Image (cartoon, rainbow, N blue to C red; front, side, top):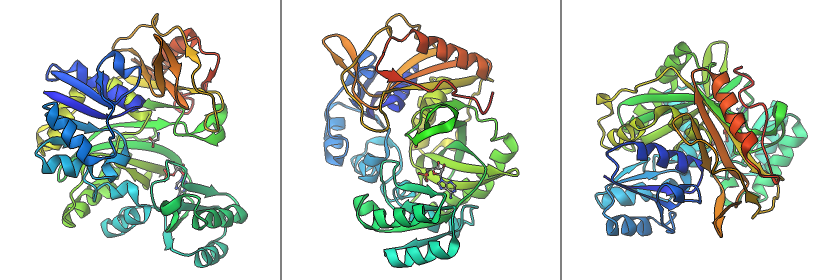
Length: 420
Ligand code: AMP
Ligand code: GLY
């Protein structure tokens, strides 16, 4: 099978690494890829936000299967275009991708599916939104409806913060994404991520994870795209997970099918767990980053078989082969991230590290310059390890971190604390 993966982060490096373990993979191309991915696969510089460019490239390169990493190409309709050209692709259609691309749409689906989630109201003008939060009081959550690169959610602990967020959103801070605003009840509890494959009718859970959104130790500092993750998430017990599938995920998949826009791909359910019950915080229509890195480390080669079966709509024939193992990933970021940071600093010590089924350094934002690996983004490396226990995975990951010589980078030293 000739395979094309779209994306350029640690998530796509982990997907590429897992796909390459599977003998069914003949050739692998990643577009656009990064310096770490280039060490294991061919990279191609195409505009993945242009569906026709992706179709043309796939046709020219006799691609049999396309795996879409990030949400933006999905929201642009890349999978629709590939399907129309008869090319098998993993990921939802543009319509189904609205489960991530529009928070108001997700709420509408939850209502129809009777899926437990935060109470909410939607607004298209600042004055009525301000009146509503003034009446509700804080804490309260203000969300820009559309895709805002993870920055469109303000968990306001005071009324002033909530009112400021409303003014910013309707003032155009997030462009079109903020033309509509969703205001939600603040939910308390512990968050976890649940990953489920859906072929439009059947579902198959493929793992749980927890990430660390704040930049610094002890959950201090600004919000980021994620500073580390581990799998499984102990808070998502078998019982709570089964109930979440029954009350949230399957009814969502059924509702999407009923509307004629079946959901196919991986559904990432962000859940808030309290008193033995999960409520939906949000859906994403892709793997999480860095959650994908820990999932791939645990799934290995079978990840490809599962994604192909999902795209071919025969998920009911599949099961997941779980080892009783744990994986943990530490994100190394450029100093200054998630604010402004320098690019171009050199990272040493990577060649000496073991790269095997228990140890992998996935590259997120890196670039090769004259043979050296340099930092080219905010989140730069995902140092990932597997072990029989979470403690073992963690000590393996931090042993690797300690051998990486990169004075311009930083990481959290407490990934996994909640579970340990
Ligand atoms: P989202 O982009 O929807 O995942 O929101 C980002 C983060 O904001 C989530 O991971 C939660 O930590 C937090 N959040 C979002 N909605 C709520 C809510 N209704 N109650 C409490 N926290 C929330
Ligand atoms: N790590 C959070 C996300 O991928 O959305």
